[in-house]
Amino acid sequence: DWSDDDWRDLLRRTMAERAGEALPSILDRARYVRTDATDADALRALLAAATAPPLLYLALPPSVALDTVAALADVELPD
View 1 (cartoon, one colour):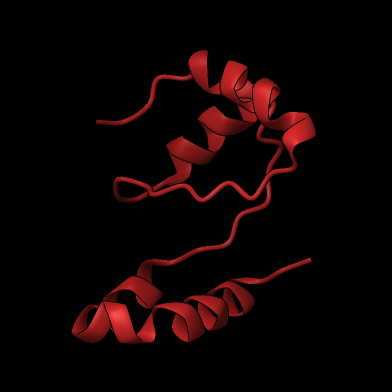
View 2: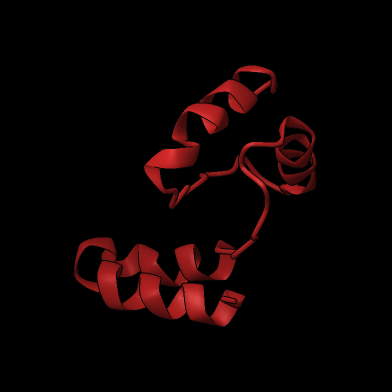
């Protein structure tokens, strides 16, 4: 299982050059949350917990991609 620190370390390594001066702000706001992306209620709870407009990164195997899209279709996404 990953932690917020693991996620931030990955972001730091992969985004340092491109993010430039924005990197500290990005890292400060980045959170790692594990949830069931195929469950609309779990996605709603994830979005409800966001304190700012979220950017979701979904690392999913192809076997759950269609179920995830179906779940997202049932969720009111922020603008």
